[in-house]
Length: 232
Image (cartoon, rainbow, N blue to C red; front, side):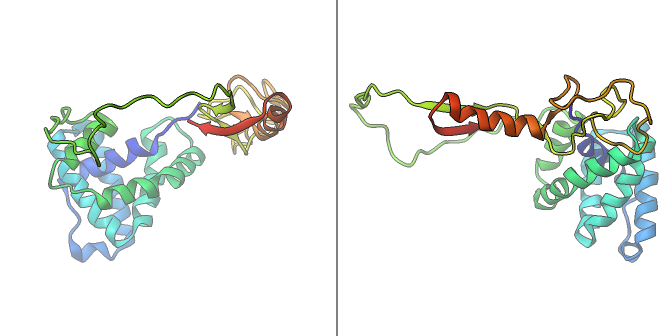
């Protein structure tokens, strides 16, 4: 099980900045920025509107231009207060997803339809954006008398790995029945005696242990002569 929580927290932060956009004179003060983001996110939980979200994206983008770490650090501190996740999970999720989200925000044209689309797609705040009409041009026209190539009749083996969830942090013997988004790991609040120990070869409530993934990949060549693989 995976919870992508950082996008929601980031949206809450940017959606609230409209109420008090940081002034340039204050942007150099990391503490002020962090405190303001904390205050704004807490206010936004009760007052989220599409207009607030789109306007706030611009404010957080300004802070991210100055220092992305200021935004990420503030969100990591806010996350446990506005969710049921532990500080450990919040920090990990935002550290993993936050930089990419902020990079996307910095590249977005927020004054066009990007802001509304982000607010709708990430948090469902705004109405679905309308689909703009346009013309799709292909590199070259379709052949007039196209025919399918003649099949050689030869069959090949293809390895298809779908929804590949391998957890390099999986620890056999750790808690498999935890209250975290991802169990079978050592968490700061893990009990000394697990309710159910994670087995060596995996658990239904956890991602695949590295050992099982490696064992499977070693087994595949013994039953198939794979020509190529697909990971989806």
